[in-house]
Image 1 (cartoon, rainbow, N blue to C red):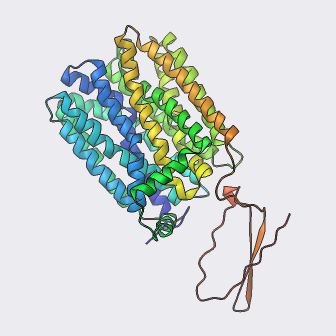
Image 2: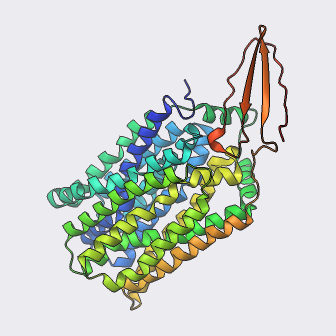
Image 3: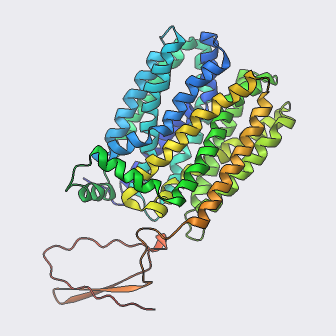
Length: 457
């Protein structure tokens, strides 16, 4: 049984995506607390531990092509449940390994790939279930990424203090298993089934996938967007990994840091919903909004080291970081569809996530290198701010080279006249350049009918 876009079961799918983002939000945006746990348990240097955290976060987005391949071949439900099992297994094993080298596999690779399957599927499933309200639904879904840190950071800080390292990761593994429940809700939508039907005449081989990605690579607009997200992700995950440690170095306690991350979480929850709702209007250019978001966060990051010793400044920066760092994911689906079309959505998101993954992998160790070579956390934050502003300008450049896309109609209004059993029904439909006026024509069986097009220009 399939779901219809924007109604019925689609809203339960949205609820499942919110739940998935709550779990993923803690693992992604409170990753600095996990980083501290690894540091304390293994007594390793900052750079080595940072590489492990960076690998885990990089695969969150870098697993996009794997997720898109599983979704195209099977379904969003299969991808989510498989990812949940891999993530849970990796986290549990991490709690019991005795050599930090093993965590590169258990936490960095196994849990990282599982994390990536869950995260990417939670984004893509929204595009399959919503059309008119896609940006708003995406904003609601990723708001879970703010709820997670807000609720779970203080809870898991208490768990860590009570049950130590092994118990902490064991319960994290149990938390990750909840994604199996959320994935079970992801009933295939009509859009998802239509995509599978369109590809049913051929089995997508490895060469077909490569060919699809090569067509995406040739898109100049997509390249600008990918470069913008690459630069932004270097900065954002550098900040999330090292912000807690930076606060500890400026005389905050671990509980203070958990509260700061909770504040960042609730701030992100509110702004992501508002950002998605604002971009649901066809009068709003998503890329211009991204330029504003990345630039504001960049300027705030550059000036934060000047006031980092003040608790008020830490709270304000937590609000800024949480509020603006995750807004971009509310419009990813719409940006990819506008550039590449619906039929390349999964591959397009997967390709974008490669750039995000590489950026995420570079960011946290970049701060470690700066610190190891005589710099400070403040220096690394200034570099992150500059890269964020550059990422915003890259998205702005995309608006200059973006051409017309895929499914836009070449005429403004047209009239359908459907005749059946001596009854005539006239349906007016607007140009599809306005998403809010898109239409759905239900299948008519066992009826002879005619369609008459009338250009009204």
